[in-house]
Image 1 (cartoon, helix red, strand yellow):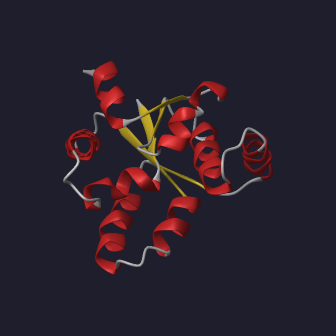
Image 2 (cartoon, one colour):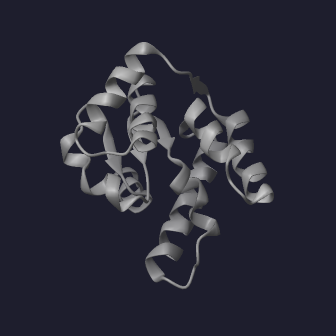
Image 3 (cartoon, one colour):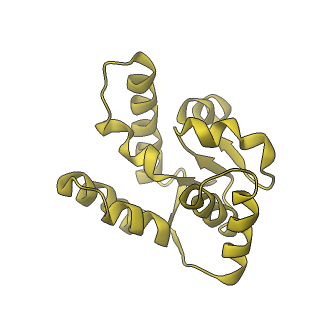
Length: 143
């Protein structure tokens, strides 16, 4: 099984944990990471993850997140086809960076695109060729 986590998902453990849903999503995201480390799940990384993580104002967080690049089994770079797909997602009202993440996941033929971004999750029914879900739904489907 192959998954792509967007930058919001990688940052979830650093969010304010006072909200129950954020704490649960954090715990489940950490479980997904454990499964990646155990080679139960294959991780995909991309150039847009590098770009967004590079702009993280918190150097320690950025460093910890970038370590996942070395764990990933596949790295997706920009291509004409990827950008065309991104533009089609933008027409659906998905912002550019989110559209790039989704396009990278589809390019890699990922089974799941995992995010905690509500804007993406609310538009998931508009996107074909990949299962878009939050960490909790992912674990529920794969437990």
